[in-house]
Length: 255
Ligand code: NDP
Ligand code: 8X3
Image (cartoon, rainbow, N blue to C red; front, side, top):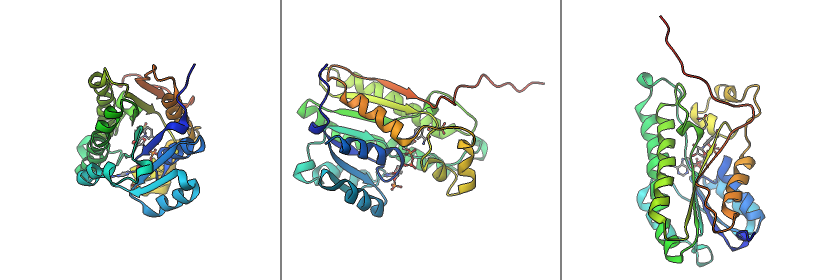
């Protein structure tokens, strides 16, 4: 079985300043790939660049800034310009209120990053991947895109979009060698909950109470696996959950 040699890859990661993105950047760099690490927090990017050394190019990028994302591929140093793996990971959940009480600003922010930002990212790099007739687009979806839960309203809907966009990309890219994978994790401990609860550390601990969640490294391993399978193989969707998580049944309001 001829796997893809990670040393041949240049991997763009959005949201590499924390959680999955940072772990994905580290995983690929450890195997000899070149990594383009992006996110908004410059201090985190500087630290990652220092840690990973010459194999890493780090640059601040807000994925909701359409013009900046469109210009980004053209701004890369020559050694990092031939991006072959695009990991559209940047995203967030904000709030867990039922829809009638949800903050519309939170909904706007989730759509801006999880939907529009992901579209801008993929669209900016796709022509290069197709022209080189190689590469891989990895989109970070979520089990929340399949399984509804109270308070998941807009967040889950953005992740359903991600899943369907991944599948539709596959339809468009048939005939090229570009692969597309939707990676859909369940509960994982990162800064995700701290962001969701607007910095309330006490509330942010609650989802993980008494549960062994996925780690960022578990998700990085999944991404690395999909990207290094032989080039003939396309993993369309991969859903990973902690063993300590499963599905609920239908809910009823009984009289
Ligand atoms: P974290 O909060 O730990 O990391 C999120 C990353 O996204 C940060 O690096 C953040 O960087 C970046 N980000 C957010 N908004 C923007 C933006 N506008 N522009 C650029 N970067 C941005 O969360 P996770 O690592 O857990 O989440 C990563 C992805 O995985 C998200 O799409 C999330 O929805 C998804 N996911 C998470 C799960 C979980 O349980 N943790 C489960 C399933 C999916 P910065 O703030 O520096 O810009
Ligand atoms: C994150 C997982 O279950 O908190 O996408 O929505 S969940």
